[in-house]
Image (cartoon, rainbow, N blue to C red):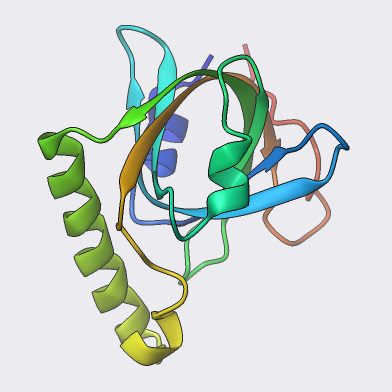
Length: 156
């Protein structure tokens, strides 16, 4: 479903927020600290702290819906991908290293934009890191402007 440029954007240096929902349809949010698209399988893996975002994590179960919004902090280019969770597991050592690189890079990028580590101390965490795999089903433009909220379509 994801073309190379979109997959690269979702996996890149973007702020990440995702949502799950509970049985009463109440949303629970969590911030990501890295994501990766697997072109061989076709799924996305979102890395997140299970303890910093307990409501989000508790509702991240196989078969449950998930929505992930990513935003490039210097341009506000934003996309949202919706999908279905296919697996949740403890992060591997490789995923933990990826999350640490993501956090270091994003802290540097945000510092360059005038946002301090202290301001981000409640945003970024890789404590008790988990990997949430999901199948992307739908993609939306969320960049502010006239196309915001529209389904992303590609020219044939």
